[in-house]
Image 1: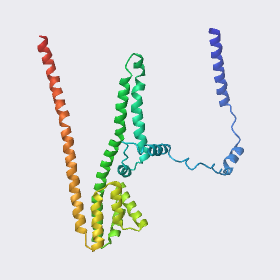
Image 2 (image 1 turned 120 degrees about the vertical axis):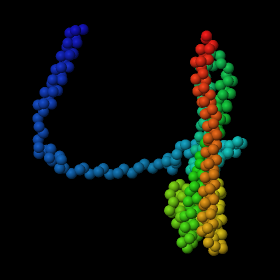
Image 3 (image 1 turned 90 degrees about the horizontal axis):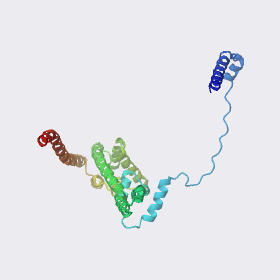
Image 4 (image 1 turned 120 degrees about the horizontal axis):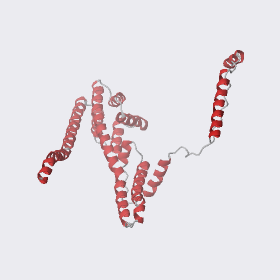
Length: 302
C-alpha cells in the first residue's frame, strides 16, 4: 500500500506544479486582437419566433376549473351552501371555495385511516379510524365556512369605517353646491383602499348602465350585503328628488355610524377581556399550587 500511496502523492504534487508553472508562464494576449474584440459591434438579435398557437383554456387556472366542475356537480346536493355575498365581498370565487371544502373534507376522511394502517396490523379495530375520519371530514367541511364568515365580518366592519369617512366627504362636496352625483364621484376619488375602490367601480358601472349613482349603490348593497350603504343611497335619492340640502343629514349619519362602530369595538374588547378571566384565574391557581407544593410534600414525608 505504501508504494501506491507514494506514487499517487507524487502524481498529485507533479500535476499541481505543472498547473502552477503553466499559469505563471502563460503568454500575454496580443493587444490588437483584444482591442478589436472589444470595439466590435454587437451581433444582430435573432428574429423573434412567433409563439405556437395555444388552446383557449391553456391559461385558465387549474384549481378554478376543478372548482367549477365540482360546483356544477354539487350545486344540487343537500347541505352544500355557497355564500355568494361573502365570497363577492372578500374577492374569493365559488369554485375555489368549494374546491377547498372538498379537499379538506377528503383529507380529513382519508388521513386517519391511512395513518393508522400500522396499528391495524396490531389488531386495532377498523371502525375506530373510520369514525375518526368521518368526524374529521365533517369538521373540516365546515371550516372554510367559518373562516369565510369571520373574514367577511371583518371586511364589513372595515367597509363601515370607510363609509363613515365617505359620508363626510360627500357632505363636504354637497356643501360646496356640487350636484349629488358629482359629489359622490369626487368623494369616491379622494378615498383610498379596497372599500373606496368598490364604490368607484359601482359609480363607474352606473355611468355605463346610465342609471343614477344611488341606484348603483343600492345594487352593490344587495350584492355584498352592506346595510351601511342603504342610508347613503336613500339620502342622496331624497336630495335628487326634493332638491333638499343633505349636509346636516349626512354629517349626522356619519357621526352616528362612528358612535355605533365605537360601541361595537368596546363590546368586543369587553368580551375579549372576559375571555381572559378564566385563563388568568387558572394561572393564579397553578402558581399557588406550585408555591404550596414543597410545604405539602414536606408535611406528608415527615
